[in-house]
Length: 242
Image (cartoon, rainbow, N blue to C red):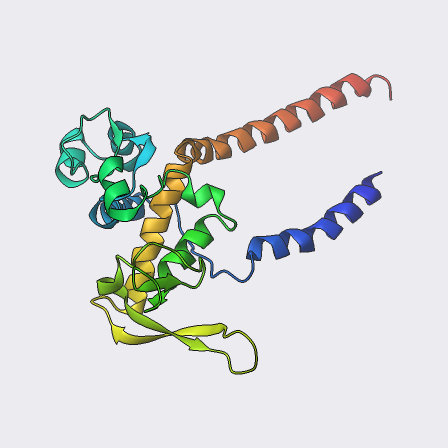
């Protein structure tokens, strides 16, 4: 039975590794346990995303608790709409205005890092994959999400990328992106920016993960102690039998 279990486990591990690569996405290395990264990511979201996108499942008060901020700090640096401390994060642009100006309201991003294949890695790669496309209404496209209607709101930071197409017959396919106009951030700085924003969205998707991971070590230590106690009890019961 034991040999069969390990045989099945070994056969599944390569499949799990393949699935985790999610089609060659670059790993984000986002760390929700890095409080400073989450604080920077929250600021990035409010500066560049909250104008159009909401976080309908996330409250300012919960941000304060999990990110180690006071109510005064949240209201000063994160609450841009004058909302109440207990309110959820709502976009500055109302759904009615968004429908008139954009055709429909931009999606809520509370679960974007959970409901996409690849999770946080997908979000990180999406932020890095915008390129100029004059054929699109917004003037931008995205290598990871073709025909995306969202413009590249971070272009001043990252710079402008243009697609390099594969040579050959048939439909043109983008081989890679080339930076043709640098942004205000270096490539390393923009990667760090995208990683912090990704970490924040990953945290928003499951805020309880912070608490769950913090108590995980204690749960494992309890199981080790319980195993030792069980072994000692078994040894005590069987001592007289032998």
